[in-house]
Image 1 (cartoon, rainbow, N blue to C red):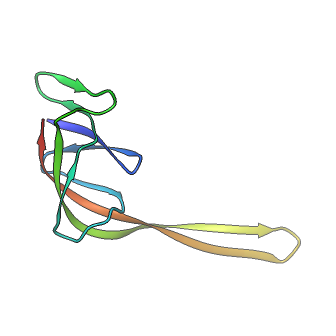
Image 2 (image 1 turned 180 degrees about the horizontal axis):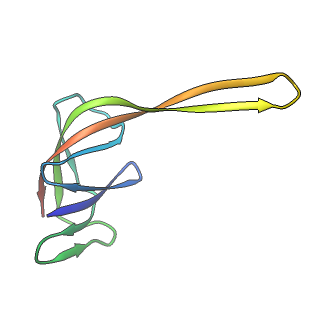
Image 3 (image 1 turned 180 degrees about the vertical axis):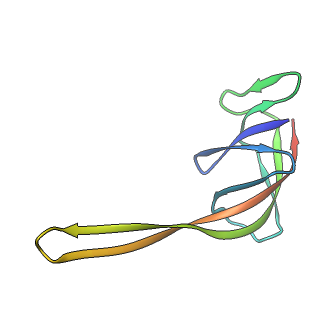
Length: 103
């Protein structure tokens, strides 16, 4: 069984027991979160879609760690002007472990 859920405007796919890396969410490491915005549930026997979310369903997950993503380099360059500026950016990410998918 797996589910499609939505957090912070981004959709993710999750199975029970899997680890999902998503954009940073608030919470302490080791705390339990409950996700109620489930868009689809896929079971061996049937598929359930919500309009837009499924009522009375939830995902229980635990926050594993907060990390920084891969560095992205940003370059500003003007030819013949002797101007070059390089900056970088690292996205804040959170790893969560899916404990249970309740429907």
